[in-house]
Image 1 (cartoon, helix red, strand yellow):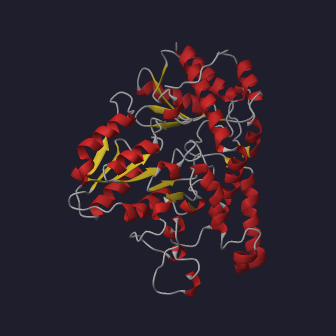
Image 2 (tube, rainbow, N blue to C red):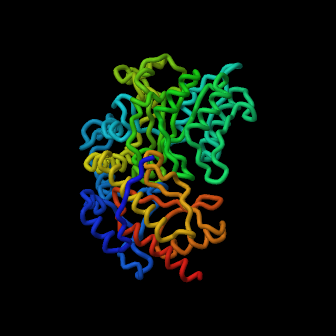
Image 3 (cartoon, helix red, strand yellow):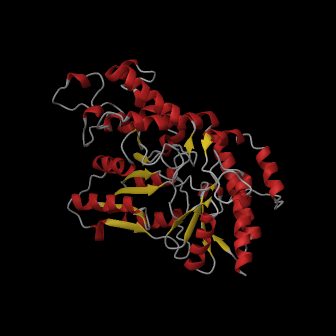
Length: 435
């Protein structure tokens, strides 16, 4: 177990000293933070801990969108070729930075569609059930969209989710799963498993997983493996190519800050780049060299691009391009280092100042979590909900996940140590007032 150690001086002055020494502190100024709703916080802005649900708007997004609107007005259709960021190859402008974020080769990643759409497209290719091997393994309590997608795929192929959907249960108290439970499930069901679809980070508990370990295990049992990285992309330092995943998909509106309903991303390992896999085809996935010959026979572009369906949505790609530029300049390595320190600082404050008030569900080991901490208020759901609403009314923004979890995510691009301090201080005040 690796846990950062602190000489914790539990004071606001200490938090501000840590912020002053933060080499990434200036990146906060590149984001638009909603104004404060409670002047007693002593801040002009909200304390925003919900980058795991919707990332804040990068300041560069407005200019990125205006550039495309102006080019549309000035050039019309010719902006496909002569715009400042020509639309025809626009998706290629985000490819390199997406590869950096996910630890992939550029040819293995593409920005397209939405997360659940991409999961369905990937399962068309990688969930190839047979009578003997048709089960899909997911985690119990998975995000509902994933479960709906998996169950519908099983039914589409004529199988019964009651027997073909294998849900790996977590600890009954915390919901944490750990690798051993996955290993036991595949030891029992591996011979009939066609696909393991697993999260990079479990959305409710904040538990992170060793993707390479899971991929190796799934492949050893003869199953394909894919990852839902909704809570991992832009949060963890990923290495998808080396992890040997068959595919992965993620959204871009959480840690990647590309806006509500933002265009998603997809990874397909290079070993599948030219494989004759079944897929749902669209013309933008056709080989670029002959796409505009408008022929009747689909010939896929090698790599992840071959799973595209339609023209890239420029107004959706522009915010992602602006955000990925920030990530590129900050560097995922440095962001992850700050994330580990900032999250451990928040954890230490909670354990020192809120003992007997808050339980932390998320694992303490840094390799088993990103920046999200999932909190339970001791005393049950009613007290937990009361605290959540108290914080929200003061402009301290986390989010609530049923039945009783408050999620807070100190995001390294724009959250500060003093934000963590003030969050905990506000909970201390709530506790003292309740008594």
